[in-house]
Length: 290
Image (cartoon, rainbow, N blue to C red):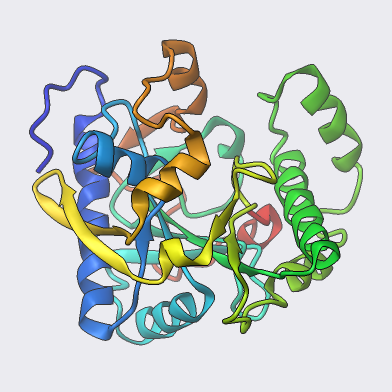
């Protein structure tokens, strides 16, 4: 239980997310599956010993082989009455982004409001991909990763990226929803079995070319750290990872930056979203890509 003062009005949401994270952590621990907190969640673990006070989500990394194990185990043994594994833009079981969602809850993002997808409170699962040592192959992987991100935003009619960003998004809206998507996913995942590359990368989020590239040694193993009233895993060299990602990661952002990066426009930790069905069939999920 998160015991902080509810300054930002999201303490109940954070506690719900923490419960999902605890389930994921225990599920992985019992089956020898590795994961680690990433992005703002790893930053929160180091800087705040838990959630960043205004953060309304939680993100984890898995390496490709660990995600495959997790996916197979959850589909066979996971508590599917309570949780739902959402794989947006999946291609032969290889998702661009996965989310472990809580069925009996609701988490609405304004640009996804009209989509037929599962909309429960979630923990994001991002794949930490091996990055090829060849510069040309690396740029190929980066280009198609950014294409997927931008195409997904265009599909969602996303409009918070400023004038230049919206100019880039507009023509992509005219392309079919799955234009080049399967090809792009294959370019990203073709390094899956590369265990000797010097770097790992994550380009299916906000990080750009240099901020999304990390030394493999940062993630050779993980360690447990306090996160609210439980412990969760972070990269063994989490401080180096955070420095590469943010520079001075102990510096607090402005309130304008905080509001920009919050996700939800509406949520409930008790009431399922409108459209929930036990069969788990949501026709628009495959079209969102990421």
